[in-house]
Amino acid sequence: MIVGHKKAIGYIRISSIRQIDNESPETQRDVINRYAASQGIEIIEWFFDEAKSGKNADRAELQKLLTFASKYKGKIDHVIVYNMRRASRDLESYTTQVRMFLHARGITIRSATEPVDDTKMGRFMENFLVLMGQLDNEGKAEVTIDNMRALAEQGYWQHPPILGYDITKIDNERGKPRPSLIKNKMAEKVQNVLERYSVGDISKAELTRYAEKLGLRSRYNKVLGEDSINRLIKNPTYAGYVSDKFTDYALVQGKHPAIITHVTFERYQTLLHGKNSRKGELHSKSNADYPLKGLILCMNCQLPLYASAPRTGSGSKSPRYHCARQSCKGLAKSIRASIMHENFSEMLKAIKPSEGVLKLYQNILIKEANSSLDNLNIQIRNKREKLNEISQLRSATIKKFIEGSLDQQDKDEFILDLDTQKLKAISDLETAEKQQSIREVDIEQAINFMKNVDKQWEISDYDLRQRFQRMLFPRGLVYDSSKCKFGTSEMSPLYRYVATKKDLPETEKSFLVAGAGLEPATLWL
Image 1 (cartoon, one colour):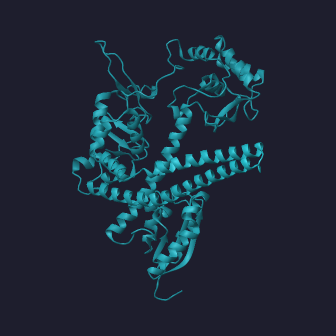
Image 2 (cartoon, rainbow, N blue to C red):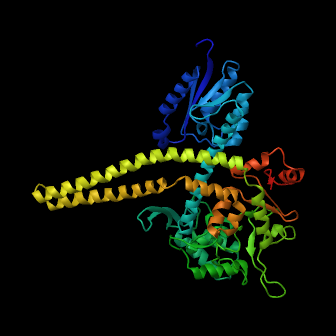
Image 3 (cartoon, helix red, strand yellow):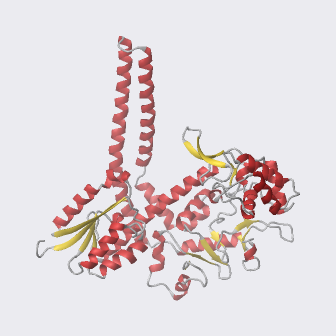
């Protein structure tokens, strides 16, 4: 060790093999070494987490790092990372499990590529950059959920197989394989059980014995109990539907083959729920009159409120949000939709980020966009060169055919292969050019949306409202009808600043207290 120099630990993390090209372990180590040398810091130990997520601190090498730091307390000054996204992508776990632990031992975090230091702006940037990583993670999660929702709405199956089916892949209209179901050897027995129940002269207990006698067994060859038979007859999948959380439990026509007909399904749904039951009907998931449906949670059961428009005594309709679950009868009041929408708009106005935060966010986004554009420009140039190369090869192939050095069959095969490569290259180029179209004007529009978010929400269409709501409140909003206030256990990181203001009046501070009985702790807005 070099006496007198500050000592540091180097920490490297990659989340997947695909990331190696961009921020490889070698790249991270080289940049950290150059930073340490420029600051007169000696790195005495390295820790490397491979293919580990940054969404929490549960990483083997990071835990070893913390143990090492504790063992050599007083001998280490810093932990150096390539950038703050490598340290963490979750502010809460980073603050409580990493930064506070190191700070108690006199150790600070340094980023080799970002302005993170002990100044007030450096500490702000440390938090903000971790928040940006968290926002990116949550955005990716939202994209994944949106993709799964889109697949479900197209009728594809994205769950483990159910009795009577095995998992398979089928091509969509573009020839890409998508998950679905295919009947197996138990399908006929399932059909017999469901059709027997639809006759209407057999109890569930008798049906259970009938299924056992018929030889219907679980996927693990076990005899089915009455609970399993009950789930079987209630499952709309057997009628060819997909109905899950990605469809908001509405019935969507599936791509898989049905085991029973829709008529049979409707017949035994009537037996299950009575003649006036609406179970089994196809319901609209999207209704512009109820943009908060799926977002607002019942104060009592913490599940999404329903939306409907019952008729008043005068015969007119009264659009409302309500909870119709048995456990909430008499406990959860229905709320007029207009009042709910007005309260939601007022809440959005109250939680807008400050001008300073928005300005800083805008500057960082512009820098990030410019950095991304440099990489995109290189990609676009490479893809155009690839297209030129394909065109030249195509011309050369035709020339060889004309000269007689290639026969017809070889020429056709070469041309087909080159045309396939060309189509893929064009598609890749179009994708890159679309990404390239993001400019400062787009960022300005995004910032303006955040500045006037309450007005933007009021004038936006249903789909835009839904996307914005899911981004801002990923776990939904509990509504306290007695106080006309909203509460949530999680908000988008950019909007959390409202809760950290030290100069809030007492009337506003009271909204930030968790309501009794709500777990996890809820932030009242």
